[in-house]
Amino acid sequence: MQALLLSCSPRKGGNTETLLRQVAEGLRETGAESELIRIGEHDISPCIACGGCDATGICVLGDEMTLLYDKIDGADFLIIGSPIYFYGITAQGKAMIDRCQAMWSRKYKLGHARKKGIGAGYLVSVAASKGDKIFDGAILTARYGLDAMNFDYRGELLVRGVDGKGAIASMNGELKRAREFGRAIGSPPANHT
Image (tube, rainbow, N blue to C red; front, top):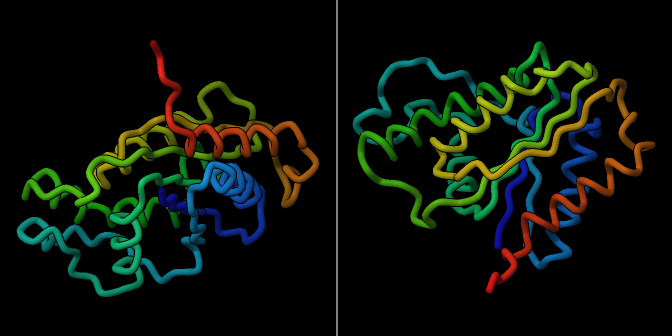
């Protein structure tokens, strides 16, 4: 099984990426292969709403997002990781998800979903605030972005009250929880009799 982890944080080695690496380690323990991609290191322009993908399912923009389409299509599991910026995911993550309009057109207008069928999608998110609704916007964005990519939204790992680069590294319970989250994603469901 192949897992694709998309780190949407502009901060290299930050809290979100640290959690994603623990999730990837948990996935590896189940035998799943994983690849972590830092979205901020790629030249991904925002969607220009030209409608060019409506007839073809292919985005007309020729930037580095074209490389991600194939990786998304090849994944069994897709995990979007983002810190919370003003009750939503980062601009880098939003640009990437908006560019999945081409995948939405392919799926809903042209009837051509991924060859692998429906995958399993997740969100990993960190917020400095502890507000009750702090993750609501990010969950909705991830849920509907993953649907466009033909992934069924299966859940999230959310951590409140984490601020400052590296703060998560001293939160052993959260690191363990992230690793267990990865193991749960990569493990087949228990047989129920």
